[in-house]
Length: 309
Image 1 (cartoon, one colour):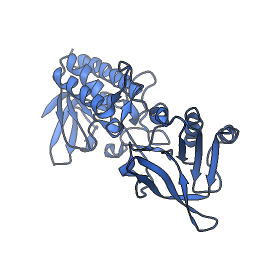
Image 2 (tube, one colour; image 1 turned 30 degrees about the vertical axis):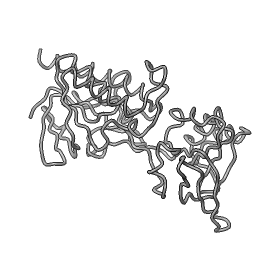
Image 3 (tube, one colour; image 1 turned 120 degrees about the horizontal axis):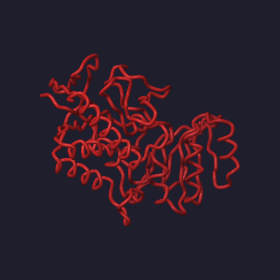
């Protein structure tokens, strides 16, 4: 099957791109990937997406976007792209089930996956006290005890942000020294609401019927296990952009995020565009992803028009 445009990924960026392309009568194909709807499908209430003054559940928001894309003529297909040939147009996509597709233009919106520890109780309590996004979920922990796991700049930044809401923020790091820059460390250590549990290795997320109750850790100095009480646990150990299937055909920064021409969604390959968290190492918000999806669709529409002029 051949399409004028194929969107890879169905988070806020991909579905926004699909809505704009479909309204332009391009009839895009959207390939859902391994997590249809993206990371918002693992969250509970979303309070910071404009247009929903009373908030909206993450899965409901993504379902609304999906139905909106379908309404205007997008086609959504389940499956996963394992490889893309960008050496010539039309581009060829190879699917996990052995199928092949071709397209005049591609929009890559495969997102970035939050790194996890892989400890018991972690995955099953995502949305029940375990979070990977301080700006998304910090509000729900007002006057609560929070643990931030990580030792880099992101962990320091998120710990400080969370002190706006929490009664206490405890930083847990498996080494006795932080990786964060000195200025970030100084700011965090100067915050009276931040406590420190360094040289502790996380072992298990403790939880009950109401959600997270604490974090079991190994004290690397004494060899003893400890239970750190907490109402919420925020993972701040980084993200991994989902770009492996591209085989290095597009340039990335040192962290693996796709690079685009500043002010656009255009990659170094004409006709290939990137949007959402796969190219955003800084903001990583649903609304910024949706905005970049709009940009990618408009860029792709312009590219397609020029090719068929």
